[in-house]
Length: 367
Image 1 (cartoon, rainbow, N blue to C red):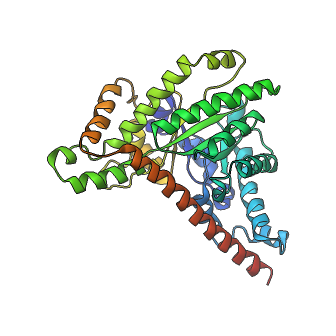
Image 2 (spheres, rainbow, N blue to C red):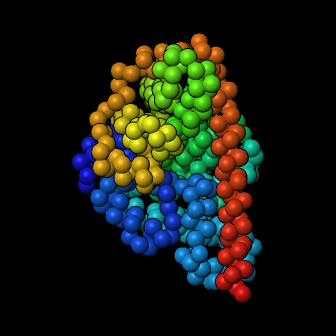
Image 3 (tube, rainbow, N blue to C red):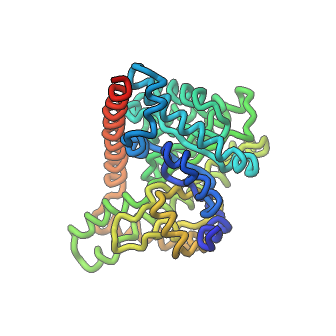
């Protein structure tokens, strides 16, 4: 293991890879990252599958075997096969960590982001199709997604809640999680292996807020560039600590073996070249969190990351950053609402490309 990834892991951060493809699985690349860089899980999303499925070759054998099926069926078979194979690679880690880690996430169709019942239905279908206890189903944290999160957990299905940008929405996600675990308990499910993470997106917040600060252009505004995203995430961790410590429902569920929903830092690749390429890892190190990284960020961490604890003692400073942004007229809720809408739209666009690419593959291999 590299010193920096080991130090990050020792500080309480579970390192997950934000990428998956058949090539990565079959080449042994994924196993190497597990062995050498402390990777203990994987997340996928429509953009990741769009990149993977656009490759000519790796999926042709399975497409030929499937024949001239409809494109939606083909996509489901290709993606769940990759996720199933990845969960098998991580199964030993899952068992060693009592299913805290060793998780591989697959997302519901992003076109269902505002359809509660359809999201619930597809979450069950994906869970049954992958058929592995260390899988996780990703559900977006839209208003319509919140009841679907509760209903899916109530069935004993592990959930990765994605596209969280605001503290307000994150609190609603925690409430949806606790209610889902309470219902799972009432439904007779063993709570020990129901896992959940709350994917709080980071770097996109700086991209959006920095643009507004640049437009303001004052020295005070410029001094806040690159600070909003980390402050927002650190306050999410403060909320995580507070909610699980104070919610009376949680203590009773934890006594029955339930595990807390961990904060997961997503969108951790640095988009501004002026910032450290480890910024959204090194500045968000704390116990009981997940950081899912693209390989470029993982390699940067391994090469020159810090990995020392960096959230404890920062809450007052983080609140001050958010207060200063408000004083400058930046409404963080407007920013995060737009980021959520843009995130859903971006994933739908990627999914549309997946459909076109897989249809092209079906046509190619079947002559």
